[in-house]
Each structure stands twice: as C-alpha cells, then as structure tokens.
Amino acid sequence: MTEYDPFKRGPHPVGTRQFAWTDQSRDHEMPVDIWYPASDAHAGEDFDPAKMAQYEMVPGFGHSSQHAVMDAESEPGSFPLVVFSHGYGGERRQSTFFYTHLASHGYVVAAMDHVGNTTINMINGESRTGDLEFMHRFIQSRPADVSFVIDRMIGGDAGVKIDANRIGMSGHSFGGWTTLKTLENDDRIRAILPLAPAGGANGDDEDPLSTALTFDWCQKVPALYIVSDLDSILPLSGMRDLYQRNPEPKIVVILENADHFHFNDDVEANQDSFKVFMEAATADADEDTKRGMDAMLSLMKPSSELVPGTHAYNLINGLGLSHFDANLRDNKDAATFLQSDLRSVMAARGITISLMT
Image 1: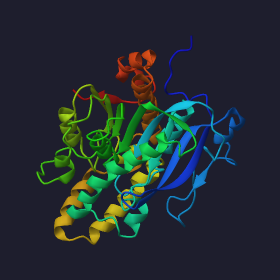
Image 2: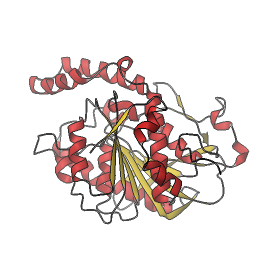
Image 3: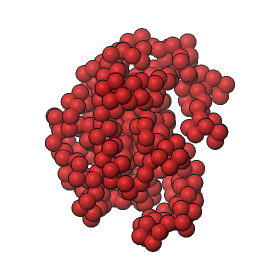
Image 4: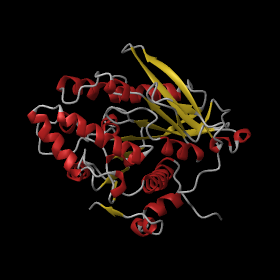
C-alpha cells in the first residue's frame, strides 16, 4: 500500500479555464477561473514552459505562468469542489501553487474576482482602504459571490461535474474572512481552510470585519487555519481572537518567521514590492494615516530575512490537501496524518511551525 503523502504532486495533469459569469439578481459580472484534473493526453504539459498557461494579472505589467494547461480536456468523473476567495486588492489567480496542487489530486478549484476589490481596482484608485461604506458593500457582496459561483459550478457551467456533497472553501486575508462569513448562510460547505484571515479583534470596537462575524454557522464545519507569526498586516493577536471564537473542530498552524504574503504566488517579489509601495505611500499620507502605516512598516521585514516561499507552499499544499481529503473524501489516512505530530512532520522537511492552543 502506498504511504499517504499530501506534499507530493498528484497523479493528474492540471487544466484551467476562464469564464465571465453574471449574477442577474445583482446585475453583477465577475471573472471566474477554474482548475481541474485534465486527461492523460496532457501528461507533463502542465510543467512544459511551452504549454503552461500564461496570464496578465495587470495588463502591461508582464505575464505570469502557472502549472496548468489552458482549456485542457478534462478527466471524466465527478470531483469535489474547493472555492477560493482572494485578499483585499488581490486577484483570483493569487495562489495558483495551491489550486494546481489540489487539482492534481482530483479536486476542482474555482476562484472569482471580487469585482471592485481587486488589484486593478486598487491601481485605479477604485478600492478605498478605510472607507466604511465601501467595506460594508463587500461584507455583503463577497459571500454572495461565493454562493453564486457554487451554484454555477454545481450547475455544470464550467464543463466539469461537481460532487455537490463534497464542497470546501479557502481564502486569504479578506478572503479568509469571506470564508468564515459565507458559512453563516451557505450550508453546502463542509470544510474550510482560512489563510491568515481578516476579522480578528485588534482593539478597535468599530472594525466592521470583526463585528460582522457571528460564527453562527449553518452546521458544524471543520476548520484548519494556517497563519504567520510575523504578519505585519493582520497580526497574530487577531488570529488568536478568531481561534477563540471559532467553534470546534479547529486547528491553527503557525508558520514561523513568515509574513502576510507567504500565502501568495511569488512570495519574495510580493513581500518586497509591497514594502516599497508602503514606504512611498507613507511619505504622502496625512499624520493619522502615517502613524498606522509606520507601525505596519516597523514590523515588515524584507523577504531575505524571512523563510522562503517554498516553505509556505509545502505547508499549505500538504496540510491543505490533507484537511480536504479528511473532511471531503473521508480519507482515514489523511485524518491520521492531521492528528500526528505536525511539528515533527514539518521539521523533517526543514519547516518550523507551532500550533495555537
């Protein structure tokens, strides 16, 4: 019998497709990408630079590639679904390292742009940090985006068959908050993986993301959080608050010597470019804003002083897959793996973690 190894790439080549779907009830159009197990005819192509899918996250700023083949023929069968929600000012393709890993193991992953709160919206000045009316808009719209995408995926609109009884969700930062919030109104989600989620109490009683979370979910849902110990944007104190409020069963794994961008593709480039951006923005900020930005910058290290992105990818891929395998596929080996000494498991791979208690 083959030993369970959630860190290893799965047996399926990976395909990806792009859609633009409109929620008529809200007159709201959103781009949606999916990743899925491709047929054996595409074996090896998802690692062939000549055939890997490319995309522009921001037009004119260069292409990125991912370990997936655009519009590849899908493997026949019915698959569990994981929906992913990006962070504030993020983008649907922010964590392809994780999407493609899940798809190689027989999952379908769907990630939407939360239109109005994306990278391009930030660049255009359309996504307003600190605007309460703006935040309340997305407190309402982000969970609705998720439920709409689940509807379309179950309905077969992406061209792959979904097992409606095996649906999970993940998200990073504001997307982690979206994951927690969606459970209040959508009972189809059976397991969640919040990554450095927003919404933890930070001493501000007026924080709308914190007060909007009730943890009054439709049903009991197993939660695995993965967070960073040196998160300069959403500090560990907020993660402790979420851990205390989150109903059982729950696990919080802390990646040591890591920051907020360890959950994205291109960790080092994202960390360093955001630090430069913040330094430039601080110079033009008013005094009240400047104090907050200076406090954040004082905690933000250059990528050279943090653990490499590959450590985060291994941790998220391995534990994330095992969490979904255990709770969406009833995989006993995955459940046993999650109950093992995870610190020793990761230490053997050169990765230092701790567990929140």
